[in-house]
Amino acid sequence: MNRIFHRAFAPVDISWLVFFRIVFGCAMLVEVIRFFAHGWIDIFNASDFRFGYYAFEWVRPWPDPGMHIHFAVLGVAAACLAAGFCYRVAAIIFFIGFTHVFLLDETRYLNHFYLIGLISFLLIFLPANRACSVDAWLRPAIRSHVTPAWTLWLMRAQIGIPYLFGGIAKLSSDWLHGEPMRLWLSERAHMPIIGPHVQEEWLVYFFVIGGLLLDLFIVPCLLWRRTRALAFCAAASFHLLNSQLFRIGIFPWLMLGATYIFFPPDAFRRLLSKIGITTTGDATPWWRPRRAVASVVTLYLAFQVLMPFRHFLYPGDVHWTEEGHRFSWHMKLRTKSGDALFDLVSPSTGRTWVVDPLMHLSDTAYEKMATHPDMILQYSHFLAEQKRREGFPDIEVRARTMVSLNGRPPRPLIDPQVNLAREHRTLSRSSWILPLNEPLARPAIRPPEDARHYVLSGTE
Image (cartoon, rainbow, N blue to C red; front, side, top):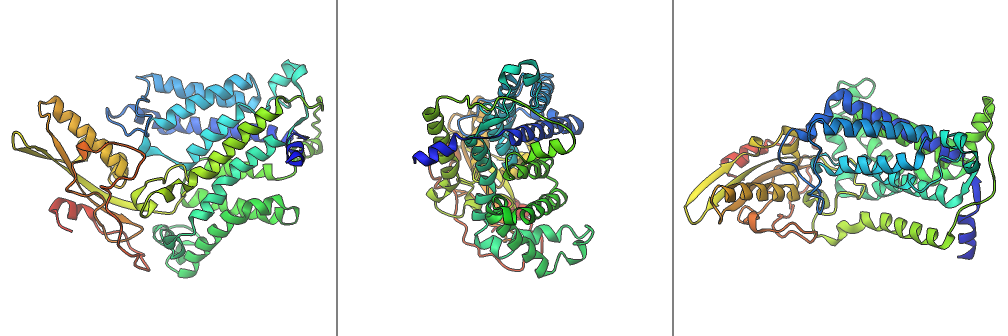
């Protein structure tokens, strides 16, 4: 333990951290620009009802034009991060501002947004402005060309965790049987090179096995000098292909840039020296207090390692129940489609209503809600509260749902006999979620059956 402790605080070249700061800041600036260019900012105020994360339902968007100002501030903070100007303040502002955006709408959860939030949190505490920055230029006293080794290994762990747990999650029956990759490829017949082969099994399993092996072994292969160049080429191919197949914005480019931190920490400095740029600074270690830092870093990493396993505390298939699915790096492992209608009854008056959620929700929000039990519960509470305000205090809400997972025929997701208005939103198991007993039929190169027909007719 003493040897590990000593190595954790040994000085390493800071240039890797400088490179990562610049890549991250530039990527976030591009992401903010994309929000302005595509008009995505207006979405946050498009509806009076939104789905909130557990314990964060109180987070609300700013009234117009507050959200546009919010994103403008995020853009300035991202630019300051890249330049290393007012770095610590910029990192705090970006983390708080981005986390606020992330928590606004549960239907827009993305694993890479979660990762961006974690990285921006870590950057608050890392000395990324001590070289090649405006701060270091204005304040020469803070200059340093070294950083403690724990900063490097902490960031490597944070980048490596999504790969590792993404690979572990792929050790599932559906993925190993080719779903949902088979369904996704069948929709990309228009693409060059792979288009003519999307219905061939060899291509399906090339992506299935290749994705599994890359996630599981890319990090150790990047760390080992003998396999680093090959691993980098594999990672680059993987992220470039993802950028074309799934259209997930800046995430593939951010991860491709982050791959560089698995190279020797002075690699960026050596690259700069080749083009005539040299950096200087104090090499004296300046970090204190060591034991407190080691304790906090250990607790943080323990949380990151344990969090993805929490879905084992719940019964059933996590891709069906969604209990423990978020924040666990279960990426691209399921495609779900479904429909839902809500039956409202007032026992005291005998009045009944049938509510189509499309009356209140956008198409995107509806598609998410219909396949996620916790969102169905939130919407049920919203409907119940509306009717209570109209003078029906004893309102009961029941959901009729039909959901397809990875090409299976639609099945009921929620027990239609349960009054959801009386169910509380908790982190414990939800007994009103029906189990999935439908085996995966293979091959499933077909779209799921229309679930709305079953919901509207009330038949199974």
